Amino acid sequence: MMIKQNFVEYYENSIKHNWELPALSNYQGETLTYAQVGLKIKKFHYLLKKNDIKKGDKIALIGKNNCNWAIVYLATVTYGAVIVPLLQDFSKKDIHHIINHSESKLLFISDQIFQKIDANEIKDVETILSLDNYSILFSKNKNADANLIEAEEYFSKNKITPSNFKLKKVDNKELLGILYTSGTSGFSKGVMLSHNNLAANIHYARHNFIVHRGYKIVSFLPLAHAYGCAFEFLWPLTKGCHVTFLGKIPSPNIITKAFKEIKPRIILSVPLILEKVYKTKIKPVLQTKKIKILTKIPFVKQIIYKKFLHSIKEAFGGNFAEVVLGGAALNKEAEIFFHKIKLPYSVGYGMTECAPLVSYTPWNKTSIFSTGRIIDTLELKIDSDDPYNTVGEILVKGENVMIGYYKNEEATAKAIDKDGWLHTGDLGLIDKNNCIHIKGRSKSMILGSSGQNIYPEEIEAKINSLPFVNECLVVEKTGKLHALIVPDYDFIEEKGIDSEGLEFEMINNRNILNQDLPNYMKISKFEIQKKEFEKTPKKSIKRFLYTILSNN
Image (cartoon, rainbow, N blue to C red; front, top):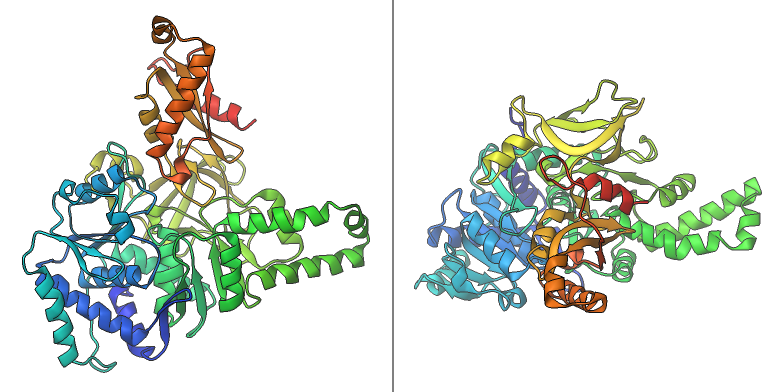
């Protein structure tokens, strides 16, 4: 079953109807109208055809959020090719592996990242183009330069207008993109998302998020993530909004500065931004003796709360109707406070495998600590005898659920059962309002503070290959990653290394490891264990024992 709204038609219609309006901007940089976006898409389609790119061929894309990134993405998917967006944080080895694994034929890459890679190690790519200026960085095709010139000349002679602008329809059942949840060889999971998956997300957002033609949106979440891509970029463009990209993941100060200048109508964010406002600006004030006394007086407390609410609204531009949070859980202490002052925020729930939305409810209709109700393009069930009181795994089925994992039938079969239910790996309950309350994770995946998926097994595989390490576990402690290390004591004794020497070797190991990991996966501490980890009869480490200990 497919939704009736076609993904490509959303963009054809929006470009035609919003022709003169601003569509995309780089913060403090260039702005493109919907007309210019349409022209650039058509030029790229011509270029792809001249480069013998066919429907279904893969095109890899890596670089910071900007207009060029957005154009390459839109041109690729509206042509019927398959986009493979990579996170900038991936290492050189991971970039090579993903591009090769995906069998990408073209690569668009920022000049800075191109300096880190080896073009000769990328097998199937015919041409590498600069994401900064679309120049050719590497090509096996002798006519690559001529194709670029020919595309420019063709469209200088053939003008496009709202009346003749047309995009060829791509069926919603077709593959749109492959999103890699990790980069390391042996752990790669390329989530295959269809045009229907994204169209379902856009359809829901168009009917449930309050934005209108001409509204402004600030995009600062990574576009290579499903959340930022779907809701800070793809959906707003179908409504005639003006999206401004902040570039690389900016600091909270840059974000709030941009909010004050742009005054967005809706804000999509990870909880970290709001939590920092609470922790650094609000909590210190609440803990002063004077405020503690004043907040015990009911009418004074309400005045103080209104001032806090006003200051938060102003910090986020003063024009927003709602802040929609996703990608990680919101700190409960902060959530209680935001709920008290009636900040218009809501927490949604999603995963890459659902492109990404699973649940959401507007701020004034949701339950505190919940992630809202299941969206109308999905079904949900809790794998529990009593889903209102007994925690069980969250299962979903419907239009948002991925096709599967690219070239990984075994992982696909584990994730999606024979009845079509996606096993999310998340544990939860539903309440009397049918809102979902997530209680934990049945998988070992760790969720980073900015919503990144961290798979401890891939880090452990790297650590286990380091000198003097027998076995290890990666756990989260107070928001940081720690590695619990059982050293190879026999080898250490053989080498005559004392406890000080062991500490030195482990510090050296950690430095070597972190050089090969993106920032959000770096290990802050190696903790040496005196004895081996407890194991099951199959000799698997009882991971849950150490996860529980790390959180206490």
